[in-house]
Picture 1 (cartoon, helix red, strand yellow):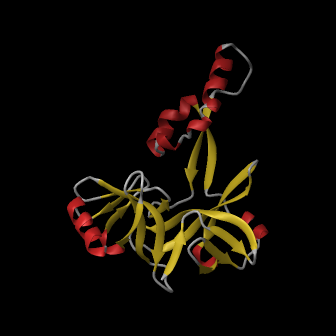
Picture 2 (cartoon, rainbow, N blue to C red):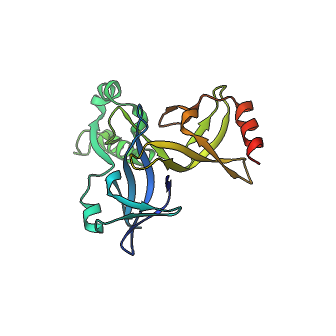
Length: 217
């Protein structure tokens, strides 16, 4: 079994070149395709979409690859941005969820709009829309992603992702249970019915999850 701790260090030899931020899975087969790796420095953080095939080994808090930091930085950005003018936002909303407009990007909306109202010769006001490079069949698991029972209760948050060898098929996730004093619990992949950007849905009720937890103690 391979274990990917979301937040694990990515090592090229002995060099720390990044951190695992998300794990990208095919929504149907539950096979991993990429890791989203945060790299760069505090002044210029970047997120790269790294093929899962680069991973040569993994431990609880480490992921090993043979490629260099330059190879990692040459990979595509996990997210891309494009500028949308205000008069195009309605059409943009039809094509892309408006939730993908990052709060940090609203300055690109407010400042040009005010300047435009004052008659300054700026470009037409608009907003930067951020989109991930994931295909419609893929979903990304991040640390802290809520896990919900079949009867609608939040039963935990994702900490780690577990895979079978050698095909990188999801075998389960480790979730944090509790609120203040949390403790880990393994959830098998066959409990998972859907992986979505906002949550993971299970086919077990809250009572079934709690009963399973008692049996493991």
